[in-house]
Length: 151
Image (cartoon, rainbow, N blue to C red; front, side, top):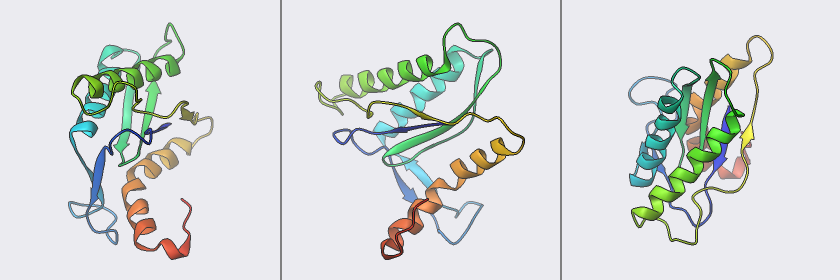
């Protein structure tokens, strides 16, 4: 699983909608992408399509200020998977600049990539649920900041 945070100068990628008290279905918390988020999604989709026989994105969510995506590497890659993720990040910045959404001297993302590798049985299911539930957890955190939730 990769987690990438947006740079403070970059626009938000999405907004949250739904009912935080519902775990699944149409009214469950979810993100609605704005133009910047659509660009990030399109570039993330290209990561998978570019290396279709080697990389599969099995779950993703584009949050207002970060994104999570779970990747399955199907076959050996010529370079580490983080190289392809970095290229995707660069492509997002380039497109946001080209569309005038991001200034020429700004980056879309903060430096660095946070990643988690699945080693044990059951870990993939935990990561999948974490990504799926991310919008709901953020909604609850925003609704109840006094409780100091740390997810």
